[in-house]
Amino acid sequence: MRLKDKVAIVTGGGRGIGRDIALAYAREGAHVVIAEIDAVTAEATAKDAGNGSIGVQVDVAKSADIKRLTDTTIKAFGRVDILVNNAMKIVPGKLEALPEEAWDTTMNIGLKGAFLMSQAVAQHMIPQKSGAIVNIASIAGLFPYNWAGAYSVVKAGLIMLTKLQAMEWGPYNIRSNAITPGYIRTPGTEAMYADPEIFEGRRKGVPMGRVGSGEDIAGPAVFLASDEAQYTSGSVLGADGAQAVGYFLSVPGRRFSGGRID
Image (cartoon, rainbow, N blue to C red; front, top):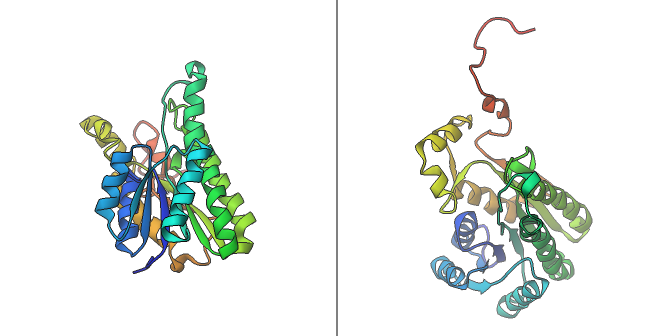
């Protein structure tokens, strides 16, 4: 077991990618705190995870909630070893018409929440001189995702936050890394992927020829939290089926397939 007796907090851990990461951590021996806006979902996932895992209702955009979450974790387990910043809410819209509240919602949950969560756990990780932070970014932090409001901006900011954390907290043996998922099919995106045309279009845009699952993100998340990655920090790990490096495939039209290109 690669995470035996480690204590991990996973935000947005009740569903989708967060749930898959939480379950994978528990299988690897971790005690997982499922931090989720919906208390029922948090408790249900904690029960499925087992291994002493607990669910905590929390809004990561609120510092008081984060303090309560951190205090609950320390009271229950005495320490915190791993933080996964996964909580996110996309409020879509075109930039010229995006309401201020929509921008703030995505920013506050996806970026401000990650900062506040990291700051809170760092206050415990620094004295113990160990810790691992895994930030769930996106290839949308590398390439703009249009009509998704502040989403791309948040994910780009999360990548830079990862690098800053690695630099400032590295002397305390705290590692921070980011994962950039590509197209991932989850319960939250199921309505979109249930459309055959959308699914096939996205599938064809991935060089590996398939849309990913939460399990495709859970594996890298386990690695980055484990001692196997003890000298890995400040890295951005793609989990996208080569989508980012094959980005030219998304250009419409027939691609040139023979002859000389000068």
